[in-house]
Length: 381
Image 1 (spheres, rainbow, N blue to C red):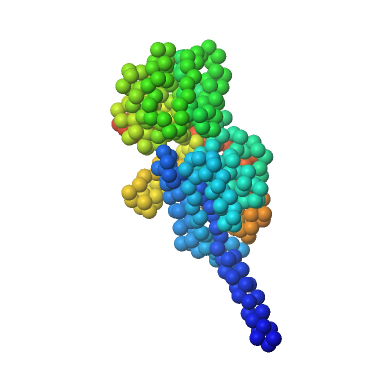
Image 2 (tube, rainbow, N blue to C red):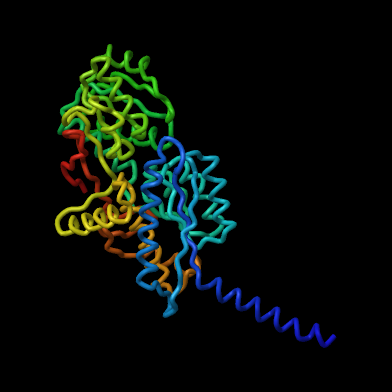
């Protein structure tokens, strides 16, 4: 009996010690496609998350006067909705304090319900589908403009600036691809109802041969082809358009607006023939901050370059960490209200959310490709 009496307080003490130790660790989950056709974008996102966490830890990150260590919990959703929900549940089971991700709209939306039900805040650095924040989940946020703005702006740009009159549209059947293509059509038609949509075709996110749909489009003589999808499909499509002698201009959203597009398209990318928009954009003094991030990224990952979304992932982590500090707690229930009213100056610009969780005054940056390089044209707000 005496032995038992001594052991019970010891066990309780050890349990409390373990609890105290656990409070020193704040887990932030990150999800992106680290495998599959968009793995280069997923890795770029992951790199942005690593940079943010490493920098915060190096500075001695503190919450309510207490030094804590941020721990990044990395998961791969393969850009697949089923895999996305599986890893979302895995992060919930791991009791993460917040989630940065997912990259694709098709994985972000189904995963968001799982995080919402668990009360875990989620910030997507790249999902643009409007439905994500229309679900009414107070835990869902994004740091880029949605498809309403992205697709609509591209549609207006196609008509006003590129003077397109005969347009063909192709999408990859993904939530993102269909969404941005639909909003593009709305924007183009709203700008000029006389614009002719000479063809609507679709492919898949894993397709490699576009001969049939491109041949059909060629016969309709479009002056612009809009593609809703990612660079892994858009690049080869451009290459095959050139081989078939289709001289139309090519346009797409942020999914094709990557450094990799030129490599994937080869000489099909042309000189100023491709126009794309990246959700986000900086001007003036903010450009220096963004350039500093790119330089730090290159120093941290010398064999890699910023692809697209890593600066937004970096900012998303910083926003979440700042909300925790403002709330003096990493408890999702306590820091969620601070996240909803955050005002944070990041490398991608000022980040504030509206009542749906969308970024306020989200900017877009228009790009083309010259000499095989992605070239900035203008920032649109």
